Image (cartoon, rainbow, N blue to C red):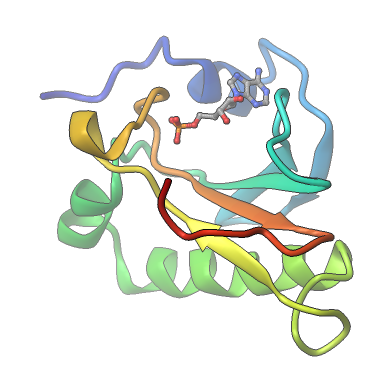
Length: 121
Ligand code: AMP
């Protein structure tokens, strides 16, 4: 499967579609999910064109990998949910069909602001 340049997150990265931005740097863009499942529901996406976690693990540079993990922490801190400043959160990535992934640009969901409940329904 090749990367679909017309997926919605690719359009957000190209500024063709607006987003409710939380944070941006060289490696990541973060914005609020349009359909929040918890009090806080943010998305953190790498700027590179990766379909999913497997694609990212196989093909991203070390700098991109570190950038994504650091980006998640920066966003969690900004939102007041990291364990340094708040009560914690859940970071979750859906991967492929069985994982329930809908948008084929790799992303982490960050859920927080309240107890997020059972890990898997
Ligand atoms: P996933 O099922 O892991 O691929 O999650 C995709 C997420 O993207 C869902 O939680 C959607 O609500 C969210 N989403 C879709 N379109 C947008 C958008 N334009 N802005 C923000 N979030 C979006």
